Image (tube, rainbow, N blue to C red):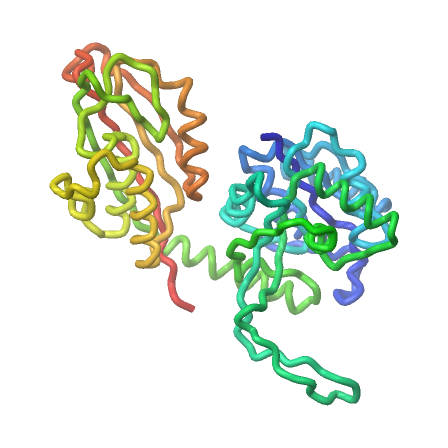
Length: 390
């Protein structure tokens, strides 16, 4: 699925007091580069389109070179309003684009996890996905002369962030219709809503702040330093290992992929040796025992169950303990069949759960039970962080 990202960086920065807001630096890096890097580092992003003021194009291009940004396809001149800027980019994007992510450059702390959450929530049944956060304060609406008109139900209200994801042909169509009717909205999802489309929401990120004033810039610096310190001081590592015997009459499932082979792995569940090793590594990073503790092979409810279901349950368990897996590195040991062609699809399966996983496949050079083709094994190491309460 071809996915492109539009980074909108053409604002005048009136409340900030400078049209060069996106070039202000935090940790020696311009604000807009923080945002661009989050998309540039994601595998499912095919290309990036940056929208900026005409007089800032060369400055943007120079920073892209300095920070070795690879995926920027084109720098597009912005318009009078944000909607005009987005439309300028949509009009020049290739027709084979399927999904477009639209993000404001003034949200520099956007995380890869949030971008992935938005992207992987897209489906044919909906027209777009937006990240939202809950409102904790009481909200009132005000009549003229500063008189309170009433109190709104904050339980059904949300604040909206970017990036927002849309089917490219759908968002382009509603933009064209809006311009014919002279309609302007406060965000891209508004236009989908106006013309009868369906917008799905996912959980946003409180750290995904919008830089509007100079005070917001100080808040960004504080969040960055706090995140950096937390990441360094609250790291946990877990190790996982699993092995299963190859037998006739079973499907070979590894990394959630059914691999054509004359034998499959023996086990109580689907015996996905890779997922089992990853589950053990994640549980190890949380200090929460092992896979047999939580999903014993004596329990009939787990017979022939998908190991990805067990992985989802594991992630829920560790998230409740404030553990967040950051990175997983793993190796599959198998003499046959050849697994490397299936690894990209395995990685995609894990990405759908928000996991960053690197997968390698090795043989045993003919040695031991693996070398004799009697079984397959996997090892995994998980790096996790502890989310501290504010």
